[in-house]
Image (cartoon, rainbow, N blue to C red):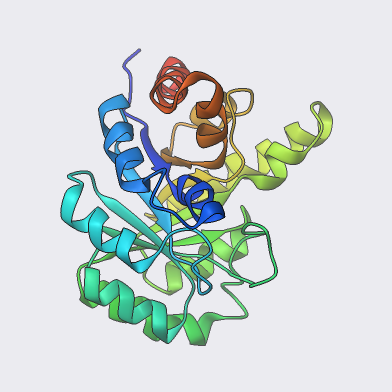
Length: 246
């Protein structure tokens, strides 16, 4: 049985959260990105929020200038964020829902309800040769709407799976994620997954054969406080590789 290369995108947002808590220059998220690259990450993910609560515009500029790995820029579908993405031209842009009052992204994008709003947004990014993905719930209707928007990638929200108690409920959500990944593949969409993944929850998601990339951040930064960020990323990489077989 041959191994597949399941890509790991490391989200560095919460290194910036710690920095911003004191309003100083450290810890530096760009340094974290460089360390992630050395530890086996395949890409860097950063969410530029409207309120700039963690990642800032300067961080995005520096990531583009100083990091060799592909940058996946998470953004809301707003005119401001479209301008930022077109200015910096990252490798990828993942469109996510965003509410100012939320602590973190609470669910998947409403692709069906927001279809007409998203359509020109996706087109502008695609015309700029930015790979567009949509962060969605693992359901068939959302995937079909994403296909109709001509995006090449969907990222399945794994938060409900990670938050569910172990046992039947988690197993049912995992089954739904697998079915969604299968349907995405049937439609010719590349499938990614992420949100809330930890050492304890990552392997069943990593074992889904048609998931090509996982984006993980908060847990890695938190674990890094105790064991070091490099060790945290290397252990996640090991757990992913252990089950990533085709």
